[in-house]
Image 1 (cartoon, helix red, strand yellow):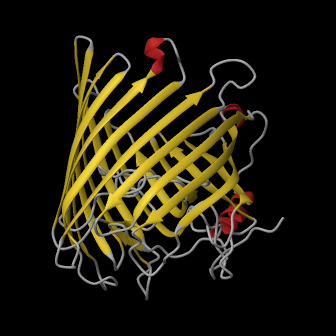
Image 2 (image 1 turned 90 degrees about the vertical axis):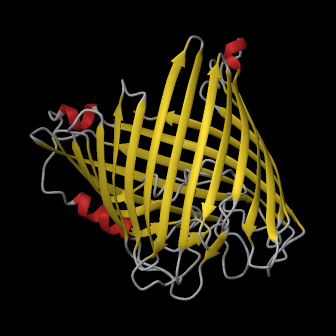
Image 3 (image 1 turned 180 degrees about the horizontal axis):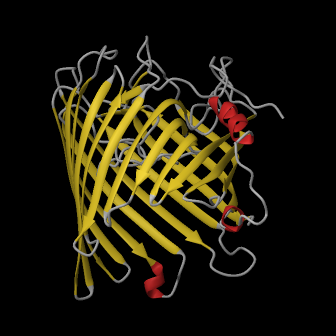
Length: 428
C-alpha cells in the first residue's frame, strides 16, 4: 500500500525510532510478566463525514464549500515494563486513512491530504514508536508522541490525530505534584503522513509563509492538586523557538454543595516573540474563565475570555488550545477580542437513557482589532449529540452529530455539519 505524502519533507523520524526500538539492548522473555501482562492494544475505526458551507467569503480562497468523507484506523499498542529498578517498554502508534468521497472543488476539510494537483489523496498513513523508561514514579518517553499539555493540547479533531517527534518527561514523585518537561523537533499534522518542522498560528490565520518554521518546541510545567484533589494550580512555560514563547498559569476548583457540584476554571497566557522573531513581534495576553454548576444530568456553564495586546493568540499550527471559548469552528482569540459563552450539557442517563449526551453552546465576541479600521464581531452556535451503545452486538459503538452556525463581520461565515462513527476494539 502506498502512503501518500503531500509536501516535500525529510524521511519520517518515526521510522528511525522504530529501528532503534527493534535493536533495544535488552531481552524480554515470556517470564517478564509485567512487560507482556500489562500490555494493551486497541484498534479504533473512525468513519468521518465533514462539511462546511462558506458565505461572505473573506480572503483569496473563494472556495464555497469543503466536504469530504473518510475512513480511518488507529492502532495503539502499549507494552508494560521490564523488571528491575528501571523498567523499559515500547509504545507503537499506527494510523491509516482512506478517502471515501471528495472532489477538487470540495477539498481542505482537514480529513485528507490535498496534493499539488488540488485533489485529495486516496489514502495516507503513518506508523511510529516510542521507547519508554520508568524509574519509581518518573517516566521518560522518546519517539512518536501525542502530548496533551496546556501549551500543546492534543487536537484529535479530525480523522487521525497529529503526533510529535521528540522526548517527554513526567514525574509524580510527590503526592499531588506532577512535573513535566520535554522537547519536540518535528510534528506530523492531522491530515498528512510525513513529519516536518513546526509552524505557528495566530488567532484564525495560519502563519505558513516564508521561513517561519522551527525544529524546536520546548516546554516545562508543574501542576499541583490539593484540597482533597478538588483544587489544582498550574504553571507552565513553552517556547516555539525563534517564533514565540509563552507562560501559562491556571487554577481549577470543584465544590460539592448538596446535590450540586460547582466548578471554576481560570487561566492566563502571556505570549511574546522569541529569538530570531521569524513572525516579527508578538504581543498577546489571554485571560479565560469558565464557571459551571452541575445537578443530576444537567451542567450549565458560563465563560468569559479576553485578549490583550497587539496580536491574536499564538499556538502551534493545527492545534487547538484549552482557551475557555475556543470551539469547533471559531476560536474567539482575535487581537483585543472579548467573548462570552453560555453552555448546557445533559447526560440522559439521569432519565434512564445511558450513553446519550448532548451539548448546546452559544458564544459571542466583539472588540476585535481587525486592522481594517472597524471593530470585529462574531458569534457561534454549536449543537452536539452523541450516543454510545451500551449492550448487544453494537456495544461500544459511538455515533456523534455536530451542527454549527458561525457568523462574523470580518471573517468568512460558516455552516458546518459533522457525522462521526467510532468503534474501538480491544485486541488484548
